[in-house]
Length: 200
Image (tube, rainbow, N blue to C red; front, side, top):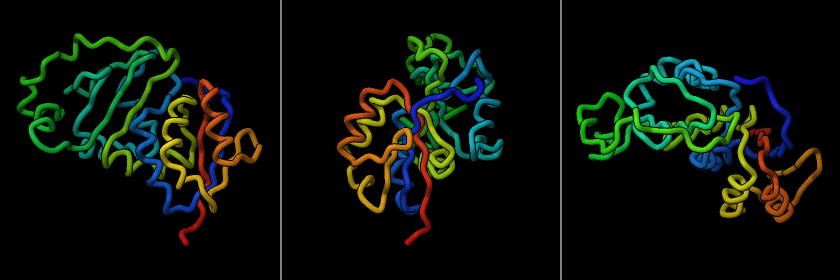
């Protein structure tokens, strides 16, 4: 992966009990800088909370550029989108589950998948269901990269997460919620991180 890059930093101060409200931001996709193709397993192991045991036992469904993959022995070029899910219910879950017995029912083999047009220099990582909830408390305090549009669209529907006692600052300038929406929409990429207050 690339060394840390410099992006405008949005810093949130949040009550600890509110952090799970940001889990769905991970479904929209966070950006992980890379300077070359990376192997899937080492890529995941560099993410906070992703141990070998967690990957094996919890990550049941993997999509690479929108297509389900069975093998963890994969390489991800820059511009790829990687989506991870815990077990999904019903027939869809059975069909897309990694190494599931119903994998033959999938309509498109993974070999046909092509990376989306670069978001060059990044892998877009999307986390769903319990994986998003499990990992948001690890990822957000350390900082996540997102596009300005992604964060704007997320925040525009969740004003309650940004009300006091939450505090917002962008590049060390305090912002109100309305200013936040206006400002981040114009940013190509920003770093979002959180300081978590003790539970009330």
